[in-house]
Image (cartoon, rainbow, N blue to C red; front, side, top):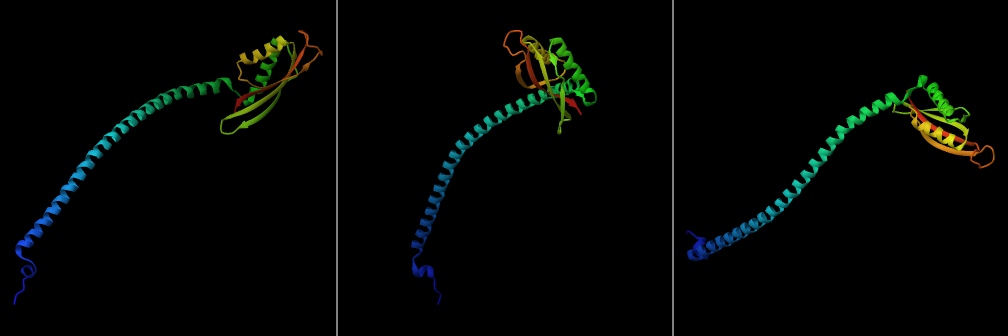
Length: 194
């Protein structure tokens, strides 16, 4: 005897209705998913437009940064040339720098009418720079205008000096009159090519 489960448990009409109902449920689910996907794509489209706009602004800003960097690089080549010229022309070599600096300081003192106690030098290597730092100590005596002329002479010197310290020791004659002599202790720095 042949059993047909289809006919035994339910009739063919009922079976068709179940299959159609299942297909309708699947179709509704597909349409629901299609709608959700369409809504997401619209949201994603708006988000993608916003992201594109943000990236365009970022790209413009970066192009501006790149342009500024190019200008800086171009100007740096000029700075490098100026540095090389400064290094070559304003820094003396260690071999003859001491005598030139001492002669220059003496000439400035004579021109300013101050009495110098004589410069004392201290040398210190500046690592990785190709220069030696020279610390110069000197004490000068003169009236106020002569001291000002001496400092002005340092500023106008063809040699490179950094005035790092000034100390007014005392008035030599003991009075604060306009003609009183002033004793000024100076600390200067200069650099020699090594």
